[in-house]
Length: 294
Image (cartoon, rainbow, N blue to C red; front, side):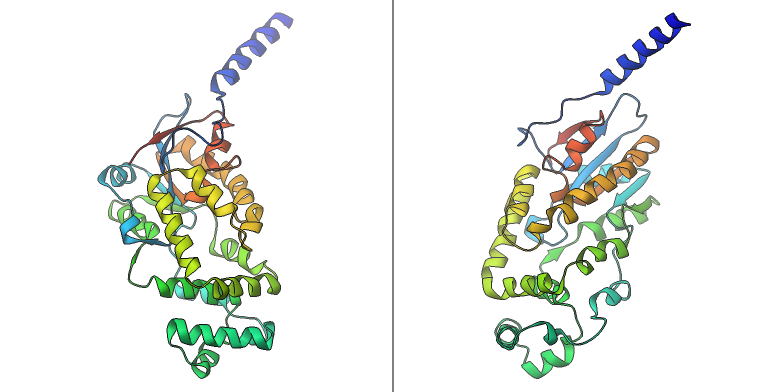
């Protein structure tokens, strides 16, 4: 009996050892936006891809080899199972009580009105009428999207279209409520500062987004992660809540999907790199992550 136990222990140790993999050094030497996920015990092929939720058409990477891997998958997994409709979001964008302007000083409010008029040709009366019930982070998001209106593509919509055309199941790693709670959990002061950052920085915000897109097309996920997290903004200071904690929460779900199905996983590229990124978290569990250059 003792001999049997020793033999079983020996073989179980060998199996575990054979599945271990050295976690990639930081920063990694080889990189890509697309990664094949493999391990000896996996029957099919699964892939991990890094997206940008707001990306201009000139930086949008969607070659046939990427589309082919989606088509050959059984399940498409994104952060959300579908791109949310306005009706799904509006409840999270509206202040529960009071007005937007209750949160700002008189000087800050004047700055908002000047910014809205100079940037978007929105007069004070119209801004008060149309935006007074919105949360500050909603104003910030709308402002960025307005500046890129008509110039962007959507990975999520594109992937969703391919999956529906080929009858591929679509699942999400989190819900709209979970995702929007990240912003709801910001204090009023943090949301105020986020909007004032946009106003103070002016075109510098757009320049940083363009710089981020330039890094994106170079397909270096560690550089992308560092660019996002080393920024001195409110959101960069929330790295754990917005990136690391979500990565940890997603890993068990990702493992389940790739164990049982040919799965294509698409999440924001900022989640792939870094020492606590999805790539290294999967490697620490014995999976091989192989970059596929697009």
